Image (cartoon, rainbow, N blue to C red):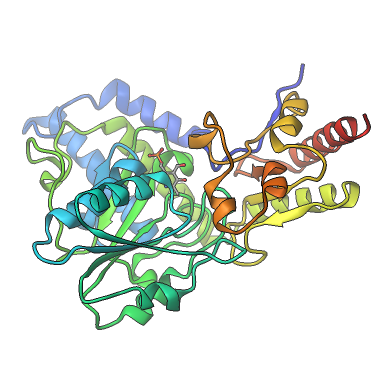
Length: 379
Ligand code: PLP
């Protein structure tokens, strides 16, 4: 039985071979505690420092502006709750209607503690207007948190434009770049952000590692209490192998971006074309242009996305919404926020390519989906 083609890279990516090798080496041989002054500890501290530099090379900024965390969820929580803890008098937060729960939930928590929360709506493509975001700012506003790329439909948000329009106002800007890093160029200076979230397992590092970029001078306080690791923002002995792996994944991503490797987009568009030529009535969810190169969220007619993927599961693995919600009943909040009706939302499937996806994989996946759709609609 052939192995099904994996097209769910927005849920998580396979670990790159180079990353796995570096992690194994670190697991076996770099076991010292980075806080220990003797040679084993110092070797681990240097490995962390190298990884921090590699991540800074990928996203810009200074290595000392990076805090390693356990995941993107933790980085988002630190961004929102840490900034809130550092703020004495103002209590207003602005987010978009399509934020991941890792931003939405801490934002709602702050609301429950008396903060005013403005949720800016998105258009039919899942994109906020930069003007609408900035228009929501008041003298009470502390922080704006707008994701760089949406996990379900791949739509890119105008974060750099928001930053430009905000110039001169005393408001912090955070972006959850978990889905964008490794797929498109991401640079904290070009974006003009104060805080930026990184997720290792979305770009070929392992699970259990993320990071938060915090621009020097940003008012933020710790939300975990303990010793002084990561400048006191992430107390707890560092996960050295995972950090080493993140550094190698950052190097790989930097190399690919430098060569403008456009495989992700080519295969994504090839898949779309193959499906469109055989299945009538497909509707693209997400922005046709301002979108992650690897993400194809499409609605099929006359079937539910769930039934289609179940019927095609021997040939292709994908999801109907983000992985975090796959066991929840109900429709995607992202598609709902885009004004997509229930019928179309029910037929939606998210297909996301990765760096190991091949042309042959695309053909197998396309054939599997076309066959499953034909079988389900012919009865
Ligand atoms: N933010 C976005 C945009 C995501 O897509 C995800 C994961 O799907 C997260 C945050 C949370 O990442 P993690 O589960 O690694 O904490």
